[in-house]
Every structure is written in C-alpha cells, then in structure tokens.
Image (cartoon, rainbow over all chains, first blue to last red; front, side, top):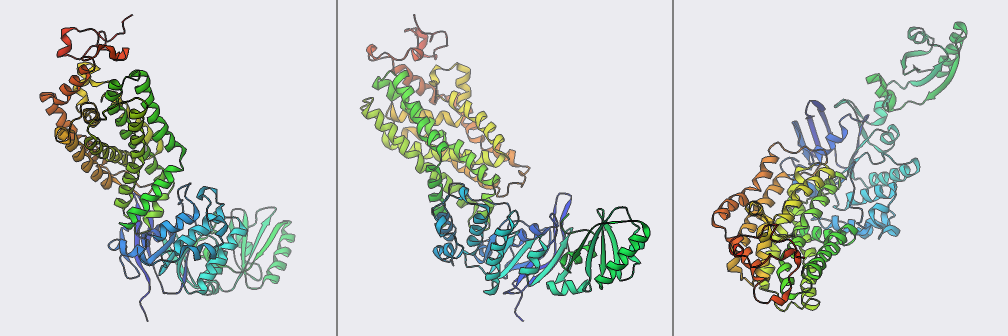
Length: 306
Length: 321
C-alpha cells in the first residue's frame, strides 16, 4: 500500500476563541477525488488552507505529498495547485498574461496554451480579468491550478456563487480530471456536487468529521430510507406521525415535517388517513430520494443548507 | 530570481494600464515642473535649476502613494492570497514592486531634465552621477516607506489617511515646495528630522550647486541606511491575508523606521550643515545678477544684513508693491 498523498490527523485550529477545526482526521490516496461536505463555517476552508500552507495549524499532524506545510511550504507549493475561495487577480491583467505569469513560478509546468484551449478560454486570451464573467473567472482559476502540473489539486467551493448552467460546466471539467486520475481535495456545501464528483466524502460539521465514506456507503448508512417532507395546515404531534404505519422516524424542522420511510406508498396512505381523522390538511408534500442530506440530518438534526 | 523578474514585469504592465498611475506619475509631476519652472522661476534658467531638485524630489517621493495603495488593494481583494499558494515569497512581492516603481519613475525624471534643458535652457544640470544616485536611493527609500504604510493599515481608507499625514510634512517642511531657507527657524529645526529634507537638499546640491557624490555622503548614506531598515520592517510586517491582524509590535517596528532620521536630526540641529548649505544656495540666487528677477514670493526681501545668518521671515518676504 503506498502512503496516502494527504494525511490529516487530529487537526486543530482556532481563531481567538472560535474553534474552527476541532480534531479533523482523514487521508486521501493518490488518484482519488475527496470531498469535504458541510455547511458554511464548518471548518472546510480552514482545513484546506492549512494543507495548502496558507495557515498554520494549532495542533495535529499534516502531510501533503510527504511535506509538512508548516516547514516545507516552499517545496510543497511546487507540488500543489489550488483554486481558492475569495480570491481575485488584478483587474487589468489579461487571461493569457495571468497564465504565463503563474506558470513562470513553477519548476515543473504545463503549457499555458494547452490549458487555455482545454478550458475554452481561447477567445478570452486578451481579455482583462475584470471583464470575465463569473464562470470564466472560475474556469481560469481551475486552469491556473493546473499550471504547476500538480500532484494534488485543491478546489475550495469551486461552484459557489455560479448559476446552475455554469456549475454543470465546472462539473464536467472536474469529472474529466477525475477520469485522468488526478488527486483532488475539494470542499462544497452542495450535496449534488459531492455525490456526483467525489470518490469519498467526509461530512464536516462544527469543525469535526461526523461521517466518512463513499457517497454510496454513506447513503446506505441511513438504511436506504426515503425522505418525505410535508407541510401541514395545522401543527401535528411528532409522536403521532412517528407512530404511523410505514414511518420509521419523524421530526419537525422549521415548520416542515420530515418523515423517514422504507415503504413510501404505505407511509403516504397512512399519513393521509391520519390527517383526515384529525381534521388536518396537507399543504405540500415532497418525496426526496436518499441523499447525503439524509445522513447530515440524521447526524445533526439540521439541514445542510440552513 | 525569475519570480522576482516576472512579478516586476507584471507590475509595470499593470501600472501602464492604470489611469491613476498615469496621472500621479506623469501628469502631476510634470504639472509641478511647469508650475515651478514656468511660474515661480519665470523661466529664468538659474532659478529653474534651483527648483529642479525640489521638483524631482516630489516626483521621487510620490512613490509611496501608489505603492501603498496598490499593496493594500491587492491584499483586500484577495490577490495576494493567490500568489501565496505559489512558490512566490514575500520578498519577491515587495522587491518587485519597488523595482517596478523605480523603473517607472526614471522616465519622468528624464523628461523633466530634458524639458529643463530644451524649454528652459538650463545649461548646467549639475552633477549627473549624484543626481542618479540620489534619485535611485530616494525612490527605493520612499517606496519602502509605502510598503510599511500598507502593512500597518487595514483598509484603503486608513492607508489614504496615513499617506496624507505623512505626505503633508514631507512636502511642506522638507524644502520640496517652499525652499527650506524660507521657512521659519522652528520649522527648519523640525525639517532636519525628516528623510525628505535630505533628499531635497541632496538633489538641490547635486543639480544647482553641482556637488559630487562624495560631498553628499550624509544625504546618500542616511537615505540608504533608512531604505534598508524600512524594507526590512516592511518584510517583517508583510501580510498576505486580508483578515489577518496587524501584529501587536507592528507600531513599534513602524516607529523604528523614524529612528535613523531622528538621530541624524539631533546631530544636524547641532552641526547644521544641511541648513547652512540650503541657505547658501538660496542666497546665491540673489547675488550675481540682479536682472534675474527671482519670483516675488521667493524674493528674500531687501539686502538686510540679517540675511547672512537668518532665513527670511514671512514679513521680509512679502511682495513689494
């Protein structure tokens, strides 16, 4: 077994009194796409930035490509590529200039022309950074991450703030990188993104990993249950809903009742009968296929996206 | 080295695309040049030559505005972070902005010299080696000061306030706008604590009095030593992240940059070489040819005997009807 390319053990980081990361541990093998999934403020970005050598940890063990980011930050930076969150380039820098400039920093480098073509930015070659659209900026950021021909890629919220169509474009790019067996550590708060792109996912909440595995494993952990979300005209007692035939679990979240069931048709029939008997009414009903969201709800009692 | 070179190139490209840069580094200095040479000196070559030092020093000192603003913008927008995940070091970042700034300052200085020669017929531009050395060390020095300003402020607003606070004494007390010999005695005593005073005095001596380098060692070496210290402090206080806090001892470090000229100022106040030289130069404007018509506001009154030892007071300098 070769050594994992990323090793994180009991990582701790606090900002003043705020504990941003509280004992995060995971490893990533070469060729794997690994996702950190969690709500905003869960400590994902802090974790990634420690691995990139941008921040110093307060405790724990970290190795990236065999380097300790705190000690060998310079060597490490030749081996990694990163698309950061909340970053920018100078407004009046042209696309091709940015690629050439950043390529010049690395010992090993990819041809900027190739990346320009691959990321569909050829027409934007001489465009100022400030004149690019959000999606183009993000494609440029991903292209720039590849300039160093890196052994590990870090994508921090690669689709945050992008509209759905552009988001799918970015998915295509990441899927292609995945087929090429690139090692990627990405963070996201989109369930769909983690399920679709990642080989393995660590679900992070309040600075801790609360579940770790492949998306399939994680979903099975919730027992293959289907989630039914209903809104009712009048409040109902949780206990009553939980005891309905076919319903495994029921809880109320922000006015919505979330029922877990293994037999959705039966659960719906018994729910409707119960409501009729109570003189209550259904306002809306949604059936969600099992997803990582269920894992998160089960572990925390909250939704992933608040 | 290669990172440093490519960053320098980027800085120059960006500056040339920036309208603000064009205004502050080309339009403003040349405007000052014509104001002094054309209006204050009334085109009199000798007086123009007297004002060349101050005008060029304004140009040289202006460095710190642009540099501090740019570095703070880069940090606030998260541009520095992007460089931080590459092998670029903080020294690469800082040194490249200083070199780029220097290379961008030289052409304007050259144009000012050219105009002085061609338009205002200043036959003798003084000691060019001294001029070159002082422009070099001065530009780097004030650029480093800009980098310190960027490091001890968090937002653009703070940066601009601090820049203003520094800029006003630097231009009004140093002889860069009003000849130092023309200032009240108290102001002169304060002036010798300012690095700008040594730059202005040095440039004026080099151009108007044709002092060779070895006669300007005080100015050159003090500015050089200050540059090394200021750059070191800027590198110590450098921050990549917009939200990272100013280290607690930052203000002490920043104050340390005032130390060399504080000590030199104390010494100068006792031994007064800089001031005597400035007064001599100023007086000499009046001496040989009365036909020269120095500008009214600069006219040091009549031939009152007090002129030999004292700078003119405001009263003496009032324009005669």
